[in-house]
Length: 79
Image 1: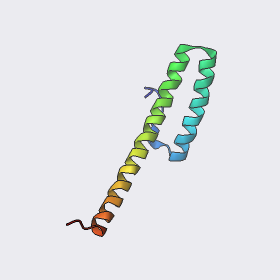
Image 2: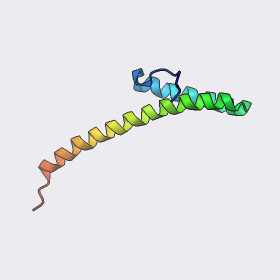
Image 3: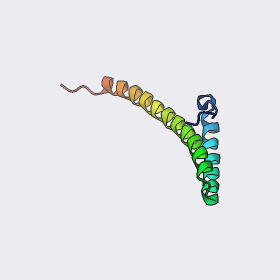
């Protein structure tokens, strides 16, 4: 996470996805320019947004598994 970057938790899922896409394009441009300092700065921002997106997806998956898991407990009775 970039120390001067924005608070990524305040972004909506769509805004987060758009920022990841935008930073990916900027990272590719920085790599073509060959400036390692610029690449590092853009990577820190990119990975901060990407980490937030993965955290949200993991949370949604865990909630879905909890919801589905409790429903199956009532349907299947193994004796």
